[in-house]
Image (cartoon, rainbow, N blue to C red; front, side, top):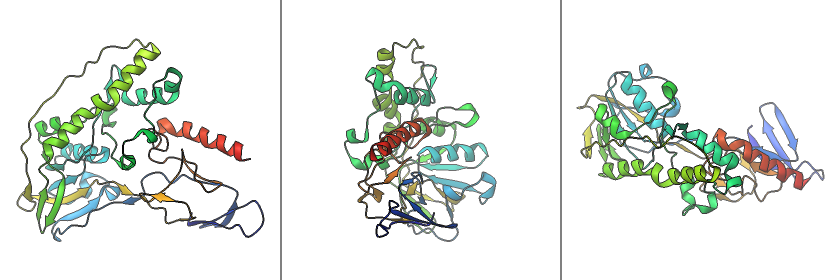
Length: 316
């Protein structure tokens, strides 16, 4: 698909003109299913040419990187998983920790996504549902990183403090660069504390309410706390530390340049209610927080698709 535009001058029901590599298609309705992650976001920096830089979008495997250590910037799911992969491959890894939460891979003998799926499928029936986008205290939170965990090797927790204890160097959020020097904010402990508290504050209460409401018989919470203090590092000379590569795991920016339709936008994303826009016939699926935080993954997409289908029936 190259471009979607309105073409209402023809006098027929097909309002949209969709230009593709195979020609132009006329359509009564268009569903944007381009996902939530479009253009790799790389900060502008003053790193010198001796430091290789690439986004996770272009990463393939540890062997494809230059020899030497790697500075991974970002601790969403991608950053944490790639830091672990590089470390297991024998690389020296420095991980710049952002403001992202973490969740356990399993809770009370069930996979984390099992719990999410139960809330999506049955939460409304027992009065315990995931918070909706309207309940967010700040609309910008829709663009926040997802809490991290890993599915590698059958799935496991990704605890940043344990990373540090095992030998991955943790630093605060990336701030600036000059030649081979990188500077970091003195917020490492703050960000680690946020990551540690995310599950207990946001998800555990929901899961416990669901257990009680649904009358589930599940084993007790057997998580064991792990504490490890990490010293703040606010500046590193990457060349002196043997770090040859900066791997940006800083997410993606939305790109709707293909959409030539006068739909209102917020944060670069078309404004909608549960995927339905104010432009008749234009809707979306798989967007971040289309209804709640399950919308951009497999747990929630079927439910959101059913809602869109019901709206089409009303329109017809």
